[in-house]
Length: 334
Image: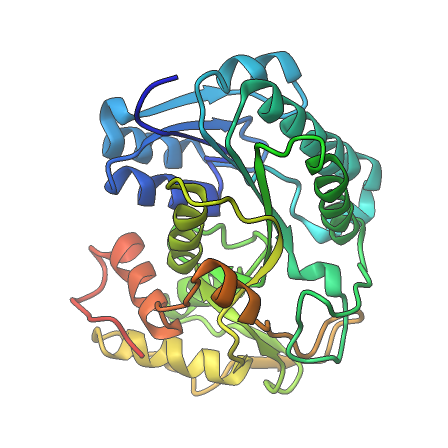
């Protein structure tokens, strides 16, 4: 094992994975990416290779391929497991596939990490485990009621991490229940907070986004930069490793109507006029969760977490990094 830590990221060609890898590379860290491109983008790996040079390497592989995973993990000190099947609808259509990728895949990763002597295993859970829970803000102790096979797979992984983690006391295993994470290079059709990149793309071209309901629905929109800083903090260093599962959001709510206004204002600040004062409203969809936001006290108190990048600042970063040649200069918004 080298003196310098080596970060191993599954799902490195995905939204959070590619942003985390870029964050670490900018800090001078060594990163190994692992992805099978089920949903990840080769363009993101090309971007990381250009950014990181020799500090970044990539292995194309599947988390269900235990042998390949074990070989790729050699020498890694921190493993961040972000590879998953994240589509709720796909999980409803094919729950067996979702279980195989998300649950069996998680177990393969955990076993490989233990065999490789990884010091820390950080993994993605989801706020979806809470379902439509009115007990707001949602704390880690709140009732869980997964409404989809995707959500159920994430909760099952938390139980496996707890039960199997006791067999590997030298490895800190930490789960993160991500709320509505958004940021640069996010798939417009993907999970998490895909409403933000989708709306930005439409509004920049003069289109009118669709909003389900009356605009009063609330979400906890958290910029991916906050996530990257937290994972870096927990996964690096020599401090006593944390354990358990933590909410990751901002602890604040934004209505969908407010979200539209923030995007419109950030575009206007760059000289891009949006022709519509509000989105096109359509009826609520069956199963939609109306209100959701995180209690982040535990992550703040135990992990030193703070969501310092605001919604407006995060939208500015999307515009800078993805649309820089099409928009004027801007500054972080509030």
